[in-house]
Length: 439
Image (tube, rainbow, N blue to C red; front, top):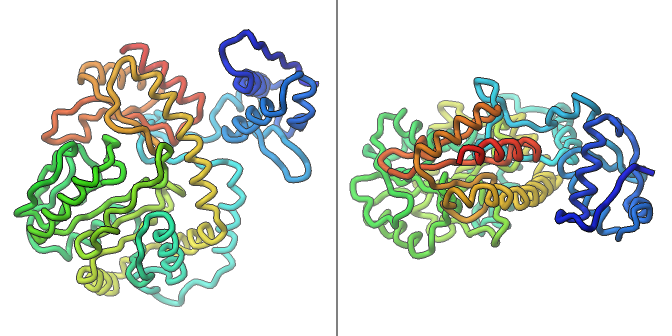
C-alpha cells in the first residue's frame, strides 16, 4: 500500500491531491522507474474514495508522462527517480542562451504515443524510395490522405492533385510569391514574423494590415497574408462579416488571399472554424502545416493554391526540384493512416484546455486577454514597461518569453505572448510564478 493521505478539508480536489503526492514520490525516488502502481480500483479501496478520484489522478499523471500503462500488465512509473526525474521529460527546444522557450510553435506530444512515431519511421526504413525526383506535387498517397483530412476537419473539398506538399509554411510562401505579379504584399500587424521576413526576402514591400480591424481595401497589393482561424499572435477569430469583406476587397483588387491555417485543430471552446478557403477557392491560397500537430522539425506542410497559380507552382517545382523530403512525407503518411495524428491532436487539445485557464488565472489580474483561449499560447495586453519586466523575470528564472511588440510593426499594441505547449506542467508553473512576481 502506498503511503498516501487525502484530506477532504483542503480546498484542492482529491484527484489533484493524489496526483501531487504520487508525483512527489517519483521525484523523491520513493517510486522508481518501472515500479508498478496499484490499479485504480485497488487504490480507491485503500484510500476509501470513489474510483473516479484515482482514475482522474492516474489520467493526469499519464498525460504529464510520469506514468505509463502496459496493456494487460497495469500502470507503471515512467519517469526516473531523484534528480533525474526533476528534469522535465518534454522540454521545449532550448533557446540560444539555454532558456526554455514559452513559444507559440512547439506542440505538446503525449509520450504514450511515442510507439506510433517509432513505428512510422520503421516503415520508412523498409519502404523503397523513388529512383529519382518524385512527383513535384508530393507523394500521391500523402496528398490523398491530406485531402481526406482537409475535408473532414476543415470543410475543404479538394482533389489530391490540387494539393502541393511543402516543407512548411514559409516554404509555401516561397512557392507562391514568385508566381504573383510585381507588387507589395499585405500582412497582418501584429503578425507572423517569419511570413514578414519571407516576403521581404523576395524584395517585396510589406503593407501593414491592422489585425484588429476589418480589411476594406487591398488596392495596390497583390496578396494578403492572414490567419483568420486564430490570428497570430493576438488569438482572435476573424468574424464572418470581416471574412466576407476581406474576400470582396481581394476580388476588387485582383489580389490573392493567403490563408495560414496553422493551428485550427486546437480549439477547445467551440468547434474549429471552417477554413476561409471553403468560401472562395478562386481567391484564397490555403496553407497548412504539420508543425503544430506533429513536430516542427518534421518540416512538412501543404498548399492548396487557386487553379491558375497551381499549374505555375508545379511547373517551377518540376524544374527546381523544390519538393519536400521523401522520408518525411512517407512518415507523415503512416502517421495519418494509422490515426496517430488524430490521437496526438486529441491528447494535446486536452492538455491545452487544462493549461490555458491556468495561464489565464495567473495573468488576468494584471493584463487583458487579447483573444479567446485556444491553441497552445495566449496573448496578454499590458504596458510595455510591465511586459519587459515580466520578460526579464522569466529569463532570470530560465525561460524565454516573447514580447507582443516584437510581432508588431506600425501597431502600438504591447504585452506578452505566452506559449504553453512545449513545456511541462512544472515548468509552466515556475514560469508563471516568475512572471507574476513582478506584475
